[in-house]
Amino acid sequence: MPRDNPYRPFVPDPAQMALRPDTSGNEINGLGEKCFSRPRMVYWAPDPADIAHGSMQEWFYTVDPGLPVFAELRAKRQEISQRVLPEIAETPAVHSPAAWTAQLEEFVTEGLCEQIGVAQMQPEWVYQHREEVTQSRVIIVGVQHDYDTIATAPDPEAGAEVMQQYYRAAACSVEVASWLRRKGWDAKPVTGPMVSAITMIPPAIACGFGELGKHGSIINREMGASFRLSAVLTDAPFAPTPPRSHGIDDFCANCRICEDACPPEALFQTKKMVRGRRNGMWISTSACRFSISIRGVRFASRFALGHARA
Image (cartoon, rainbow, N blue to C red):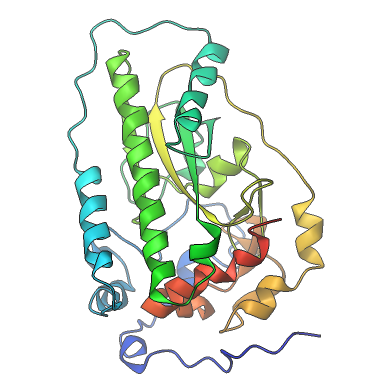
């Protein structure tokens, strides 16, 4: 029996919904498609003109969140994303694959991130109509939200916390890429929340960050669901870190925390076929429009909080 939710029935902002395209998010995402294809941008495009929901995305930026710190944090994230990386040293450093990977833990020790791992790059992680990825390794960075601050969602302070952790994730990826370039290896940071060359959740799962939860993101053994990701693409010969399983798939099949918390009731009861794979998608991309309003982004942070201390 679902719990009562004070945010239901959910009514999306009429101004936002007036911009809704004829094409649904589920259609773009490949819901029900039986043939494999690479992921497609639904939202958070670097250029909104490239996606069907671009007008809705542009509307999002016109909404005043009510805190001056939002503009400051956006400027910080913009600065870090445009930072000039150091030149690549002429002589590449040589380490064993295991030694390369072990060195990454220094970024955790220094407090730049809470978890870091490496996956071997797979072509199915590259978005359609984005530049091809030639690098052989994906380094994934995870930064954890402050629990007490994110628990204030849907208040504006929680939205600022989301932006702060996106900044931390981006800053760490830039530091990792800079470190590799100084050691003679090309490296490219990949940061959120805007779509870049790759989708980050699959490589994060592949390199030990956790398992896909019913809420549509990763549930991590230590951080729960309350963290953000960034990445670095490189050919440095890191040893991949192994995936970790802790029973999330079975747990989610019998848990209703996310279903009860989601205002627009966007979660399916069972996994669905998406782009040729029954890959664990539980969320209706079309119904999940709540998360693309300012208040919705804040609430989405609380939406995952039920798992934050799992």
